[in-house]
Amino acid sequence: MGRPSSAKGLGTRLAAGKALGAWLSTPLSRRLPLGEYIEDEVGPLGLDQRDRALVHEMVVGTVRWLLLLDWLIRERLRSKKYPNSIVQSFLLIGAYQILMLDSIPPHAAINETVEALKKTRLGRLSGLLNAVLRGIARERDKLLGEVIPSLPLHLRYSHPQWMVERWSRAMDQELVKRILKANNERPPLTLRVNFQKVKRSVFLRRLKASGYVAREGLCSPSSVIVEDRCDPRVLPGFDEGLFAVQDEAAQLVGYCLDPRPGECVLDACAGVGGKTAHIGELMGGSGEIWAFEPSLSRRQLLRSNLERLGVKAKVILPRDGDVLNYTGDLRGQFHKVLVDAPCSGLGIIRRHPDIKWNRRPGDIDSLSRLQLRLLSHVFKWLRPNGRLVYATCTYEKEETSELIRAFLEGQEGAIPLDISEVLPNMGHCEKFITQEGFLRCLPPETDGFFVALIGKA
Ligand SMILES: C[S@@+](CC[C@H](N)C(=O)[O-])C[C@H]1O[C@@H](n2cnc3c(N)ncnc32)[C@H](O)[C@@H]1O
Image 1 (cartoon, protein in one colour):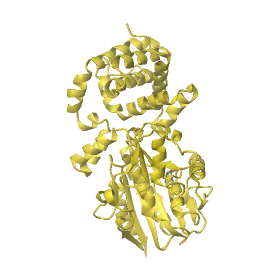
Image 2: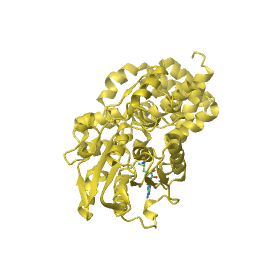
Image 3: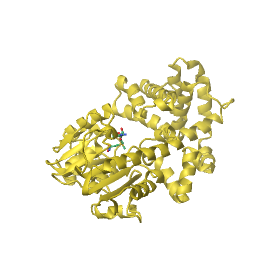
Image 4: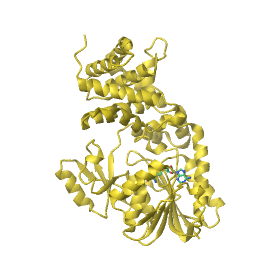
C-alpha cells in the first residue's frame, strides 16, 4: 500500500503533468515557449515560491531528458506505445523524479504522481503508471550506473540524433560531449548589473546582506551569478531596475557594439530589449536607439523593461517592427548597428530545452537565408566608418562563420574586424576568440553565442 500523499505534493505533480501534457500535445508549428504552459497551470493555483519552483523543475527537467526517459519507459510498455498523452506525461514526470531528482525519495515520487493521475479522468490507468514507475525505481542504480552510460550519445544525453550527428561532423568529439553535458545542466542565474544605477560591488553586498550567495561572473564586467535557485523578480533591487537577467555571453554583445553617448544606434532585432537596454545604459542619457521588433507582445515587454531599467537614451520603436518592411530612408544614418538575428537557438538549449525538440534540420538553412537578408538590408543604413555587430545564440556554421564569410564576399564596403579590439579587459574571454577574430562562447561557462564585428569603408 502507498503512503498517504500530501495535498501540496499531489497538486504540484498534477500541475506538472498537465503542463507537460499540454506542451506534448500541441503540434510543433503552434508550440509556445515551455514556460507559458507551466505558467498556465501554476498561475491559478497560488502556489508558494518553493512549489512553483518544483513544478518548473519537474517540467523543464523532464523536457531536458525527454528522449532518454521516453526510451526507458517504452522499454517497459508491452506495446511500446503510450495509451494517451496524459498518461505519457505522468509517466515521464514520474521517471524524471525517480532518476534525476535526488531530493525526492523514489517512493514519494511514485506515490504523489500516481495519486495525481487519479485526480484526472484517467485515474483508471493509475495501475499501469504505478507498475512502470516501480519497475524503474527498482532498477534505478543499474540504469544510472550501467545502462544509460552505455547508450549511444544522442540517447545518453537526450538530444535529437540529427543534432548530435551535425555537431559530430563540425566539432571534435570531446567538444560535442562537453556541449551535450552542459546542455543538461541547470544553467546559472546570471544578472547584468545596471551601471547607471549601482556598482557591481555595491549590488553584490546588497544581495549578500539579504542572504543570497552571489559572485562576480568571469567574462562580463557587469555580470553577477546568483547561486540560489529563485525567481529573479524576488531579488533585492528588481523593482528599482538595478539589474537585468542576461547571460554573460549576451552581455558581451553590448560591449562588442561599443555604443557611445550621442550616437545613433540601430537594434535591428530587439526582441524584449535585453540588449537594447544595455545599449541605452552604455550610451548614458544622450543618443538615439532605433529598436525594431515585429512581435507586439515582445514590443510591450521591451517597453516595460526599458522603463524598469530607467534607460534615458531616446528609443524609437517603429510601429511595423519588421526591419525588412521599413519604407523610410535610413541610409547612412547609424553609427552602430546590432543584428541579434533570429536563429536556431542551439546555443541556449541549457536554458530552453524545448528548443531541442522544436527544431528541424531544415530550419537552419531557412534561418541562414533570413539572416543574410537582414544583414544585407541594414548594412546600407550604417554610416561610412560605422560598425555592425552580428550575433546569434548558436554554433551552426551556416548561421555563423560561413554566413559572415558569404556576407563579406558579396557586400561591397564590408570589412572584417577583429572582435578582440572591442572586448572589455579580455581576461577569461580570450579563449573564446577564434583565429578569424570572431567570438565563439561555449557552455558551461556561458551560453553558446557567436559574435562577429564588421566595419564599413
Ligand atoms: C534573438 S531574438 C532577439 C533578442 C533580443 N535582441 C534580446 O537581447 O533580448 C531575435 C528577434 O528578431 C525578431 N525578428 C524576426 N524577424 C525580424 C525582422 N524581419 N525584423 C526585425 N526583427 C525580427 C524576432 O521576433 C526575435 O524577437
